[in-house]
Length: 272
Image (tube, rainbow, N blue to C red; front, side):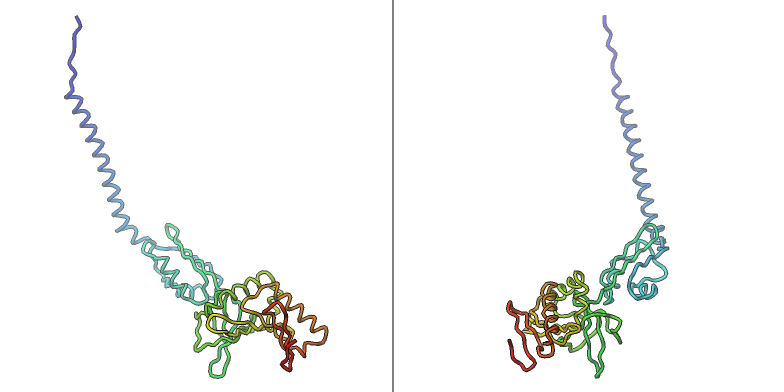
């Protein structure tokens, strides 16, 4: 006859409960430890974690100390309280800065990369009978006004009306596409760009204008619409060269390239 032995379910249940409780206490202890470590880090360690190395990578004509001053970077910096966006904002307010990037690297390094604006043209500003050159980039930002611009071999832009001037001001938005085209010309044909002596902007209302170019070494001016590119300027230079070889440079004061048909304006005022 087969015997049946009863299973002790109560003992098995208690064993499972003890095991489960043990796991729960381990999890609670683990989470508690993490919380304690987090609190210690946030309130004890982090506030004392300092920036020990500041790397400045800049092509500005400013000293390291001047850049640090502009950025508001003092001698004592704390890693987690340091706001890199604030540093970028402060440096961006300096007119000569084109772009800036500030980045923290754990545990104690701050790197600031600053790139300057590159001048495209020079404008002359009048003040009490004296002229001061201002450097302008392809975005139309007047980022520097100084005592001399002789060290820059750049075209002079004229015909603009400035009631007041300051570093950081911006040329009218209507000129932006032209400045972009002029910058493209410089990149694609620097030789042709260097022949430009002066560009006079002639306003035609609020949103339109014409351009009058003075080219080295010619006295004859060339007139364009509001757009310019390498092809049309190279063609204009060829026409100027032909006139010069024919001895007509002194009789033709201006060549108009605004339409398909070239118009020559003589010194006496007549057109041909």
